[in-house]
Length: 389
Length: 231
Image 1 (cartoon, chains in turn green, purple):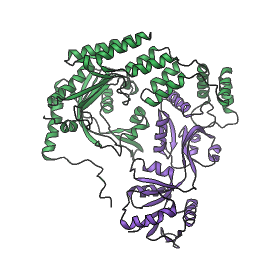
Image 2 (tube, helix red, strand yellow; image 1 turned 45 degrees about the vertical axis):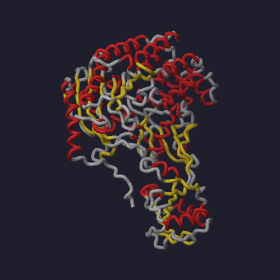
Image 3 (cartoon, rainbow over the protein chains, first blue to last red; image 1 turned 120 degrees about the horizontal axis):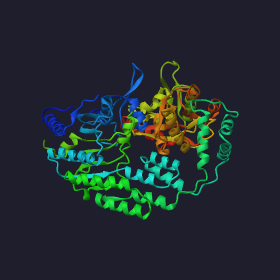
Image 4 (cartoon, rainbow over the protein chains, first blue to last red; image 1 turned 90 degrees about the vertical axis):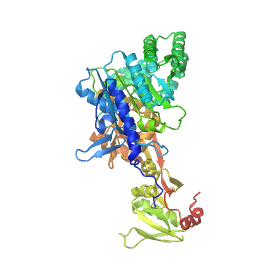
């Protein structure tokens, strides 16, 4: 009675279709290894703990996680190569500079309404330890374009972004530290980010009775907060009274803080709205922040160095599409990000994509953030777009 | 092919369901041989009753093995999320009320709202080196609600029973669970966040679009619709 239901798994490939796909994969790998990337074969199965720690619970809506009954843990089918490649690089030592190439399937849980496959190939690269970030960013984008050239895919569109533009703006604005931390943390969640700015912009409202009592106790000192919390209540769980007192102290220190000036909220909004050719974007970011008396000079210099580096590898950086909001859905990218789509094939997923994720290396155990950038091409999408290996 | 209706096989939910149908002129008499999960039905033609554990009914609806089922909205929203969208909540039945809520230890006097909880998640992670844990059996409801509330850096710990004891047992810091009077939560030193109501659930008559809607089943359904107040 479920005959009408589509099969859950992907189709089996054989004959000519298989040959074509293998040829595309081989062609791309040849381009990447030819450019000095050592080929890696990372595992398909990862400890789910790592992914949950890195991406949060939402990874469960995007990846296949399942119980590992023998050791009563949980496993995850790799949703991309970035994490497994970074993990094997960590084993070789974070401080080493290295460039890797890889090819293989990744696995993604898809929404009911989504027609994208749950299993598909990625062929890509990851590069660690290149101190000249601008040059590495440009090299990665150029190599993806070279890969697509090798497949005869010359009709394409590029979109780029860079979350560090907004981060450096948040650093440069005279924000209260707790507000800056909250905004940085929720940059990836646009609705929450907007709600935070709205909240910070309002005149402080008088706290409710319980909050008022808490702030009053915090003014007296940590023991007063601890006494208040413990009074008539049982202490359960791992979070201790000291943590409650510490947070109450932090709340008291920032309570009654003046609202965020309208100009600051407007400036954040104005910067988020900047888009266009990268050359024009740079000028606009410079004008907007200078006019507001805010200095994000180092970020703009890095931006400019990247444009120079892109020009050096033959990409028309001036006209390269850039959108400050682009990349907000991809949590681990914290620098240059890009996507390449086949021109006129709006229904196809992007042909290629990638970006910089320095800060993720620290969360994976690097003593300090290591320069890390990578990108991949989707061979099946390339074939649908007319690839000729 | 008859129209099959899945009815909870035991307890208060079963009694309330039978009474609800009886008030609409449909008598359901569980088979005298109690191990047989069938029931006789009077007052409706072309209808068969299947007795199922309430927890199984969402899955049976999603698989299309029953046309109609009685179960809590909490279970439907939790279980169907990933499988299929074609199960419709057709009619609230006015019993089986329970709220799905976010609750934290009562002595967390600095946590009143979901926004507070989010800040505590960030604190907790930096102090303890791991994510704050939420014990629950409502994984999907929790994820969806926390995403909307903008809470990040938490981990779900599966808990299929005695969830409210998790903070005390130090297997989780906070919980998502159902409550009707709040007494169990209070007894376990927990408090519901002021904006921590995820869902006001009650028993619902649910219709499966996945089931085989033969002309006979359609006819029986049409005959029932008015009496049961279905659209």
